[in-house]
Structure formats: structure tokens, C-alpha cells
Image (cartoon, rainbow, N blue to C red):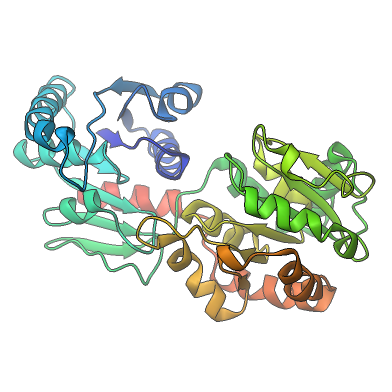
Length: 365
């Protein structure tokens, strides 16, 4: 089977696509990815050994603008280009992961009468996937609460397709000896003591100034109970109060292999993108989430199930201060509380999303 995979822009779209493509490829299928040369896919897709067919970026403005006037012509041209690609490469199925790259792929597949399968990462679906779901043969959901369904097809909660590195770490976490080996090796890398609790702070690849500043201001109180691995984002290490750093408080601007940071984390303070939430659930790592108050509010909704279950603590972005760190995060750093929260996550986390989505593709194609 030949599958066209559409994902682009952010790692939140691209990483689940790569995880699914890896699973499909291992099953003997051929996968061709489409994306733009401006998004992360331009680097991530070739690095994963997958072929990338570049298409033009089509902005989807929500307000009157020149781009809105140009939209129909741009969309028509790209849809026609993809129809030609689908014919030339004898595509059997199209799987999209949302975002601006997926819209023309869904439209082209519909015109070519090729089955469409959708993977929705977020608790609140985006516009592209809402459109594609009208004729999709299959819809894969990361969260059971996501209000999206295939109008005339299969809708299934699969969990998020996770990167192989995360799936491997989740498997290692199931074996106490291997879990300790991973923790010990990662602690040595970051100059931390594996015998002492470790809090991981990360605002994502671009960092988060509010998290950086407020958390580091409470460092004196945090360090009485735990060590800290603080990933600030590139160029943002200056956000961290210099008096906070030193023994037991490691600052990194960027960590490319985040599975190594997870390997030492007893508690994570972070945003709540769909990928982060799914990875923490699969690994059973409790979190304090500080959702970005932008877009359509999907970051809070991504984490809501785990907040309601008691595995995550929610602090609104504009309320995340050093005082809230002291009053709400410090008390979490004890073995009993962390174990209770870890157990809640392990009862609900999904670590084989890639396999489940690949099953759906095979079923619908």
C-alpha cells in the first residue's frame, strides 16, 4: 500500500506523522510525506529517512486580508498539483494530521476518490480536520473527549502516535532495573543526583519566559526538597535568576533528546501541548501544567482529563508566580503524592498510538 501523509508547521503535527509513518513502513507499506520548506518538516522528515514532497505554504487567514483574496487560487493550484502527485505515485490512502498542509491533501483525495484518514492530536479539533472529517473513512482521536467524528466512517480513540524514543522509554520504565539504568545515566549527563527528587521545567522548544522567571525566583524553596533540570529555550537562559543556578539546579537552553530529560523527571512543570500531555501520560510522569492562553484554548483542554483525575495540577499562565510555585508545587514533591499521581497516569496513558493509527489506516484503505 502507498500512503500519502500530510503534516507540517509544528512538531505537534510532524512528530505523530513520523511515528505513524515508521509503523506503516515497518509493516511493508510505502509512505510519502508532503509539507512545506518553511515548517519543521523540512528538517525532521528527511532526518527520519522519509521522502518529503514540498508544497507551497497556503495561509488560512481568519480575518479579511490580501491572503484571503488569494486563497481560492492558491488552494486550487495546490489541490491540482496533489491530484497529479496522487495519480503519478498510485496513492492508496491519505492520512492527515491537521494544519494548513492537510487541507489541500484532503480536498485532492476527495476528488481522486482516495480514502482519507485523519489523526487529531488536540482535545479541540482544528479547522482542517473538521473539514476532512466530513468525508473521511477514519478518524483517530488522541483524547476521548475530542468532539470530532467521521461523518460516514470509523471514529476511534487511539491515543497519540509517540516517537520511538518515547515508546522505548515507556517500555524501560516498566522494568525497575532498566528504569534505574536510564535515570542513572541521564542524571550523570546532567550533573544531578539520581537518589534525590528531580523537577523538570520546560516551556517547549521555544521556551516560556513566565515559567523561566517565576520558577527560578522560587529556587531557594524548591532546592530544599528537590533538584531542578530547567530547560529555558534557546537564547532564554538569561530569564533564569542567576542566584538560582549552581549545584542541584541545572540550566539547559535546549535538549534535543527530551527522552533523556524525562528519564530523570519525578515531576514536570510545563505547557500542555497535545504531544507533551500524551508523552507524560504514557510515561506516568506527574505534571504542573501552565497552558498557553492562545488559539482556541486547546492546551487547557488537552490536559483537562488528567487535571480532573488528579494527576496534573493546573496553574493559569497569568497566575504563575513564584508564590504559586512555593504554595502549590513545593508540596507536591514527596514520594507518596508523586506515586499516587503516577499510578493515575499509568492507568490511562496510551503508549502504542502509532500502532493503533496504522491499524486504522489499513482498515480504511
